Length: 551
Image (cartoon, rainbow, N blue to C red; front, top):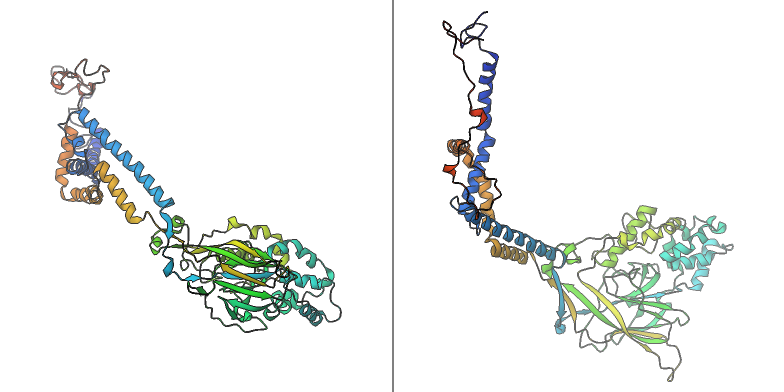
């Protein structure tokens, strides 16, 4: 048996055993890992946490970090701070929810002496706007001596075109063979021009108009307009047709206002038509009569005066600091539309329906304005509109908000004619204010960003003594200061970490006996427990004459 001397490898002097080589290689790595930048940064964070707790201005925090304090006192202060933090978070969340859902308030503005009161737009839609003489002349011009039997009905249908009539009667005309054979004529390809050729002109429909009690030329006040209910005439409307075949129209529009000193606050017209019904729409100048509004009155020549009231709501400029979702309205210049340079709810809904028509059928009905990117549907293409009319008119598919300045007109009184003093029908209709508007509604900010900041600071200061600089201090301690300590105080952090690791762990008493019945044993009186890993293995002495241990 060959015995190797102690400390000598079996491969000879100068060779190391595998275990000693592995130990030497692994020990520097362990040291590098223990003193690496991550461990130093963790030690720095631990140190900065203690420093922050000792020097922070937050109420009660310093008592948690003091080592001399009993555990019960530390736990008490920790509970108080935790309760304050939870209460602060709950109240801040409720304030934030209030700021998001109800930051405005609507009040009354009664300074009516300084108001400029605009007169509303009055849209008059004849349920039968076609002039029979012009209709016959147009049919003779297009089809000459052999017109289709349904040509007059189709032209009347085009003059009163609406989504309802599109859905109900389009198939009737598209499936007619006599009409389809002539689908290259003007009524099929350019229905809007055909409607202009057959509807009644202003001078054959209205006469003896008055504005604020003064006589005016009717055709200077009433201009043609295409609505989603068909062809109409409108007074004081921004959306009137720019030009029409029988009269040139300038691009200038002047809004009509009334004043307290005016003799009347009304618009009156006389009509040659006493055998038809005219739907009367009263709305603001920027709005357009459409699907969002029902007619205030259907005039059948038995009412001589319509008296209405106005409810105007406007929003102060400081509401622009809020989002559209918060204030639930859009300023007139805040969102650009393709159909109007002024944002209104009806203009937004009108554009939404136009976009849906274009996306589904590549065209729009001719009662919409012809703008860039859109084209008018032919009669045959209206069949596609009829198939998708439910999807096009679905209001839930249009994300439109009310305008921040909007007006509602309500009919307060209808004055019938006095049959005892004259005939049972009248040719004139007067629309007037029932009284001078003395109240309007003002929407203003109740809870803005400054109020939110003050509320947050007040609540955090009340419960925790927290301020804006306290937040800056918190970020400073755990970012900039902690990183700088790793670079500048590396030796100190290593020494502190070594002391912490070398410090014996405090004993833990897991007894369930309460302290007031049996006090815990002091640390210095507790018996020392020897761990198994501290016990050295037994070593045997070599036999006589041998200087090394046996293998």
